Length: 373
Ligand SMILES: *Cc1c(COP(=O)(O)O)cnc(C)c1O
Image (cartoon, rainbow, N blue to C red; front, side, top):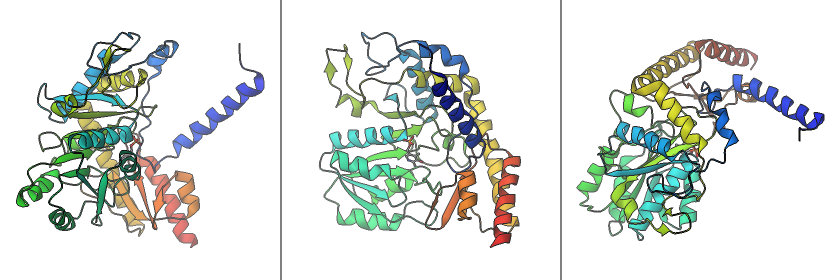
């Protein structure tokens, strides 16, 4: 049955509005240059990546083979040792963070979770869901955790195994916790057992290409890492990747006869299309393409920061960040460019598709705004 004309019109209207809104989109970390129309034919199929991507399954209308290639690419980029890791394509960074914390809790039920006050809002909800004890640590102005506060707090709770929820690019300022420094603190306090999860929602596909390379991945001591697939890569459907040390996952795997598979993932039915989207992006770009994408973003970010400073705006950014932070402009400018603001501070994110022309238009709006006030 075709849609009634009025219903079809509503979809057309929505589509027009979304096209317009997408043009003016600087405030959220979402790249929008990814064309996956070639994958449209997969929408005709009941794709479902049910269960563990590495275990055989009786449900075979799936893209799990491609999913395995996606997580393998990520594992290599994040310097996991061969055969020592496991992972899957999630519904987003938040699910990967939930997974990391869940693993940590299963390994250390009596542990204490530490995270900085700049941590993503979804994390306190996840800790609540999991019933995990936790302590919030101060953050520096950059968004990076305050290591002194962390050290002092750890010292007081030395009887409990610490689970560190590390931010590799905070939501507001893209501050990065250094898990090398965190591990040093653990050693200095003679803490022998610990777990570190890296929340690399935005920066998982950026940080491996930065110089100096931030300390955040498996070689640096992470036990699990979560990345969003709709942020830097720009999947039009929210998704993500979570990776963890295999020996941790093996301790919680349960075999389920009904699907002939392991119940290692958070959800049962899983998206079969998003692994194909990520796979296409990875094949198109390759490591070299990612490197260029990062370089391109950094160049335009520097330009944006400079242009704002030139008109007298107190804009700043963390080293090698694609987030520019500045005092919040008027609500009109924020609305037009879809800028998030908190406590009088706004930010813009220069993802790979943002051009210097867009930046010029935005800076002109901010300049106008200042002229009026
Ligand atoms: C975006 C973001 C998340 C949540 O990721 P989703 O993919 O939106 O679920 C978590 N942590 C940080 C730091 C983020 O920027």
